Structure formats: C-alpha cells, structure tokens
Image (cartoon, rainbow, N blue to C red; front, side, top):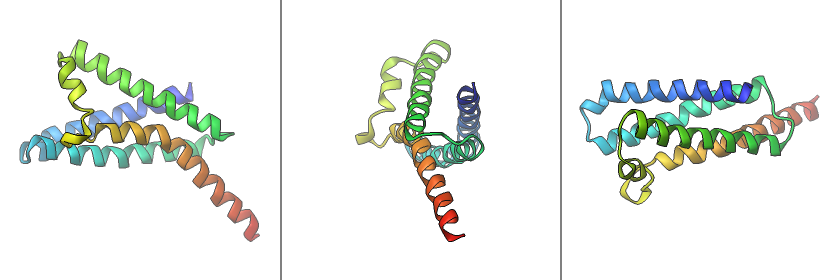
Length: 136
C-alpha cells in the first residue's frame, strides 16, 4: 500500500511539473527543448520523492528496492499510455514518439530513473549508515 501511495505522490509531482512547463517556459521555448527541461526537472523531483520514501520506509533488501522500482516504472508507463490515449486522446504514434531518444526525447530516462532510483537510494542510505556505525 505504501508503494502505491508513493507512486501516487510521484504522479502528482509529475502532473505539477508538466503543468509548470505548459503554463510558463513551455510557452516561450521550442516544444522539444521545453520537454527536455521538464524531463530533467522530473528526474530531480522523482529523485526527491523516492529518496524521502526510502528514508521513511527503508527497503529490507536490494531485491525489494528493485521490485519497487519495477512496479513504479510499470505503473508510470501504463498510466502514460492508458490515460493519454484513452482520456487525453493522444494517438499511439504520438505516445511512442516520446520514447525516441535519438530525436531528443528524454522520457525514457525518467522511466529508467524511476526503475533504478529505489535501489540507488537503498544502497546510498545503507552505505552511509554503515559508515556512521564504523565511525563510532
């Protein structure tokens, strides 16, 4: 249940990030560049949410961290395809174009980060705690 709640927080953060882009700098910059900025800020914001989650509810194992990342990635990709196709009316071609890194789209980097960040923060927090214990 906590994993789903954390993902819902990430969803809200992503929506706010996209709205900020659309309502501000997205009006002033070329669409692809605005999207790239939004992806970078999205990676940072998702990192903050995931880091806070891992600090509050630490994973008990690396496997658990990887499973959380895989779950969040699957939920994110499913939401993007299902919501933006069936609710927002975007074509499948438009949605798939967001995965074309060679044309400058960075969306796959967000998915990659959401997948690996739980493990990254699990290792980072455990290493820091181990170092703190050794210093005492």
